[in-house]
Structures are given as C-alpha cells and as structure tokens.
Amino acid sequence: MNLRRSGIGMTSKRTQLRMVERLRAAGIRDEAVLSAMLEVPRHLFVDEALASRAYEDVSLPIGFGQTISHPYTVARLCEIVHAERTLGRVLEVGTGCGYQAAVLSRLAKEVYSIERIAPLLSRARVHLREIQFRNIRVKHADGQHGLEKAAPFDAIVMTAATPQIPVALTDQLATGGRLVLPHGTDAQRLLVVTQTGRGLEQETLDEVNFVPMLAGVST
Ligand code: SAH
Image 1 (cartoon, rainbow, N blue to C red):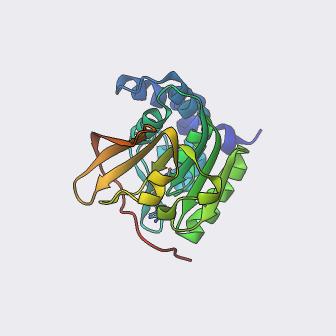
Image 2 (tube, rainbow, N blue to C red):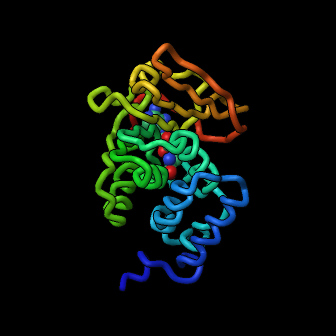
C-alpha cells in the first residue's frame, strides 16, 4: 500500500472526514461538493513537510509566493458555480497546486485549468498524475484571455483577484454559465457573473482574500 497516497495519522481518511464535517458546520450545503472535498486527498497537493497540516482550516504556501486556498474557500467557490447543476466544461484560472481543479473535476465532465507560473504548473501536473483523475487539462498561459478553443464553459472559477472583470472570460460563458471571481485589490469580495442569455447578471457575495491576478506568463 502506498502510505503517502492513502494517508495515515494527520492525513488519514478520518482526518479528511473531520475537515468535511467542519465545512458542513461552516455552512457548505451542497452534498456533491462535500463528497468531492472528501474524495480529493488534499495532502498530496502540498509539500511533504506540510502534509500533516493539509486538513487544517488554513491556506498554505505552495512556493513562488502563492498559496493553496483555505478548504472553506475551495468548497465555497465550487458550491457557487455548481449550483446543484450538472456541469459540462469548466475553466479555472490560477491552477496553483491543482487542488481546486481536482475538486472541480468531481463536479464536472471536463476541467481546464490555466496557470501563468511554469514551475508551479509542472508541480500541479505531478500532483494530478498522482491522483489519476483523467478529466483535467492544464495549460501554461495568461488566464485572463480564457481558453477560446474549449469555450463555451458552464462555469469559470478565478482563484486570483482582479479589480476588473476580464471580458474574454464573460464572453466564454455558455448560456446559464457562471463566472466567479475575487473582485477587488486590497478589499475583495466574491463576484458571480451569470450569462442569462439576455445579458450578464452580477451578484456580490462573501469577503475574501486571494493573491492578485498578474498579467503575462512567467517561466
Ligand atoms: N486554485 C489554486 C489556488 C492558487 S493561488 C489551488 O487550488 O491551489 C492563485 C494562482 O493564480 C497562483 O498560482 C497564480 O500564479 C495564478 N495566477 C495569477 N494570475 C494569473 C493569470 N493571469 N493567469 C493564470 N494564472 C494566474
């Protein structure tokens, strides 16, 4: 048995289940999201030295000044875009370590995820290979332009904050599709943009704290 993969002690299924129960207590209601959070071994997405802290309610460093989001934040973003629907194609901007993409992949047919920092993306590829989820594609690019060739998307999740709503992303929403993004710079709130078919509708939700969206790619 691969102990790192199956988890022991602080990375065991029991510890994972406790994290999910805390998410439920904190207000996450979508059962599909809670199951997805239980299915994805978060400890495989962080450095081995931090694996014992993977199921704590904290964001953790993943290198290059970036972080893996707090479990509640990951679940909340999933819940907002999932909205109890069956999702076809989903786009994530800001792959980081690949964890959010992995959780999204349990709620959608196909997930595309874009990251601007090449070495982070290489690590994410290793993590995603290890968990053997086959419906995730990652790409090294500036995610603000979206991914025209795979559009339209039922959901787009941005995991880096921006004061502007990237037009390329709203253009790539399917009818009924939802874009969620951390909106703002210092003070940020989640913004949900829905393509209703007659135009875009916006809704402002929770206060959040994400790393900033940056332009261009880094090698
Ligand atoms: N979803 C990630 C969270 C990563 S933090 C996880 O589960 O771990 C946000 C990520 O967005 C960082 O890795 C950062 O490099 C990336 N990012 C910032 N601006 C970007 C852009 N324009 N295009 C693609 N990725 C971007």
